[in-house]
Image (tube, rainbow, N blue to C red; front, side):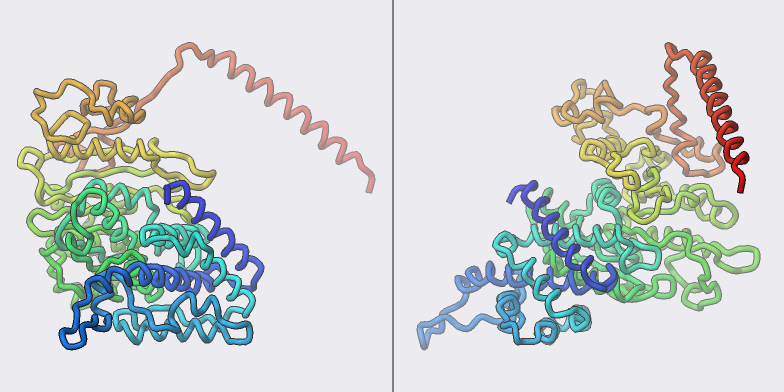
Length: 542
């Protein structure tokens, strides 16, 4: 199935499912989990049918009977599938006679799967009795089309992610809307920059698990290994609903992982301090009302620079707790990438002292400023931070500053993202800095041997426009490699705009004086018309 076919299928399925909801009494939040549960059931049967052939071929023969033994759950798990009981199969539900209670049958299917697989216990939705019979049957038919039956695992993963995104855009299932879903552009930026291809990967605020899913895509595209061979996944999530979404998301994508529902401020449930190869997160910004007197927080070994206490001994903002957690989870060569509120790069008082200590470790690698409208339900700008404890010695006193506030594609009036060229270009800047290789092709040839732009860079219009020589250079308004001395001069601010400057493009041929006269004339005419209209209104006798 081509990329275009997948996009078309995503849209067709969403439109059909959303039309059904629109004609019901259900809100998007009430509809979200049961709908995603049906996607999981459909996917589970597709994987099961594909795995049956592989499982049968590998079954050993009983020397007494000369026949192959019966398949078991372990056989199907090895093939990346769930061994489905008969009444949990999607086909069984789709063919259920009209007189049968379909809501009860789907609830039972979910329970049967949980009984067989304890890791999913309490995770799958079982609230289908809230749907009326016709809506539920129509919805089951939506995911029983021939194109859906033929869809493979990656396609279902895409569909699941697409549905999560659409629900996020509707603000379904989160207090502020979209908390469970980090926009793909920001996830891709983090994954491309830190390149999580091995070892332990941790997200202590994992939402619906999007960081893990994109990591799986990265490994598939860059490594000759399966995701479960390459990495071990650990997630922590505060909200029960998001935890369920994450576990379902991992199941959809065939990713083995441990997701725990817990509050990262008062617990370290996976005990991963100093053990992680990669940390990725989009934590909740500016969390207040954190209990500074909590014993766990007071003794937390994840706070090497101490809690950001106010003069009253309270913690008014959780941003610098999160940052220290991410830093402390890393092993001696670990990398972290995370989204953070824009205010954190210049925060003062105790937060500034912690930021200074972080900078002085030499492990802050890059800060990227992001424009408004990357989040689906909030318009706030943000920064993406990157730590790297394995930085080269010559980069220890340097931080790559990227101001990407003018780098985006306008998807709609309220949504921005990165297009492929922009994402590839930003990644090329990071790779050039990390390898100390001025060429933007991302390879590690000696600098003196690099004189030509790589073929991939030639094809990338964004790179060609910003780096016409095909090599890394500080670009006004976009990027600069800042030294520790320069950062000290800026009072340890990590706001990229302070370092990259502002690129002002003045059109010398533009006649500003004449245009201002035209504007004044237009304004005078509008004022006259407004006064005339007001006189007419006041002249009307009541």
